[in-house]
Image: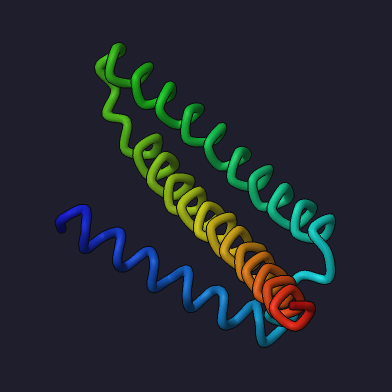
Length: 117
């Protein structure tokens, strides 16, 4: 699969995640403080998975060095890489959601400025 096709697929997943999140929690954050907190939580969850990836990768390498077939380590690595990808999609989704709020606020400000003149 080409990188462009993969990126397009991820962007579609981000759009789907945004739609689902919007239905459950609303289309915008109540404040930028809320956006910060939500994005920070998703980044922390992604970091947990990235740490697990390194752990799995190191275990894989230990197996290779000792001529042990590292199938379980590879499964562990793949599972946590998938979970990390999911968490990073959520980071991207929440950043996108915050950006939409920024955009709406800037449009509102521009509209107010136009009315003042």
